[in-house]
Amino acid sequence: MKIAAIADLHVREDATVSYRELFNEITREAEILVLAGDLTDLGKPREAELLAEDLRGCGVPVVGVLGNHDHECGHTEEVVRLLRGAGVHLLDGQAVELKGVGFAGVKGFIGGFGRRMLASFGEQAIKAMVSEAVHEAMKLENALRQLRTDRSIAILHYAPIVDTVAGEPPEIYPFLGSSRLAETIDRFPVQAVVHGHAHHGTHEGRTPGGVPVFNVAYRIEKPSGRPYALLNL
Image 1 (cartoon, rainbow, N blue to C red):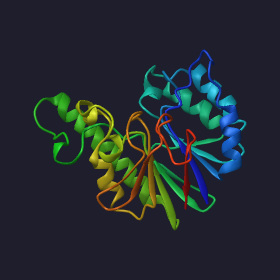
Image 2 (image 1 turned 180 degrees about the vertical axis):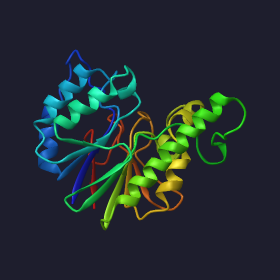
Image 3 (image 1 turned 90 degrees about the horizontal axis):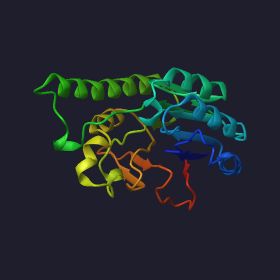
């Protein structure tokens, strides 16, 4: 089973970039396409419409999650409606089985990694941020619990480990992901994790429990030599 995974397409409403040919190529190379967030640049419905049009050239099932950019304009429900209308299995705390592989997906959130992870202490605003990170991890847990397949993949936008954000400025690491996601993943028999968001990070790492994690942001150099990663399950 070959699975193509890509993130951070950042489709803009000026339509200067089309991904139709890339999706056609992926149809020839893989059996499933995974989109790991920031599918649009500003979360505008027109951007989602353009992506939906390009995805009609993709002949394999598509599954994914939204990213932070997809929430920017406050039209998230319309973006979701348009992409699901184009056949995308868009996940937000849900799970789906495609061709015998289980996929569980959430956007994730910020908070930092390891001993430097943000704690729920002090101002209410800090507690609210930590609460959101915990909420996303709980949604991921609920999605993973739904899977009954022998093979499963977790789809995120934010990173679950620090290794795959290496290459970004260390000062922004806390804004690129959270170890709470990895803690959840390591409680389940997950074969791989994909995420985006860290455009200048590192392609591959592992959770503390040994699960392979792949940063599939568009600009990340990948073994495939293409903007998408190819995972073999």
